[in-house]
Length: 103
Image: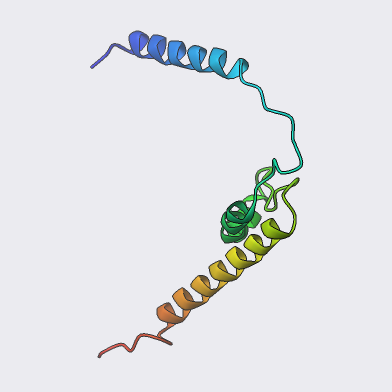
């Protein structure tokens, strides 16, 4: 087990190295197709309900902007619909609508 001051020194060195490495990072300028596409929309649609709940406490967006347009929106709708179907099926199974309980 490390002494406490050695632990803090190592954590400080790791945090400092991470800060130095991220300070050099840059983003490429957004082009016409630089935003998320169908798979990004599918993922964002699937996590839209938890993101909406999280947006009450943190600055979280549930919809990416800019995006690629029609295909992102199509993926978002499919992902949102799939997450709602899974939520409905899990609630029905929990209540007993799909699973029959044996007494």
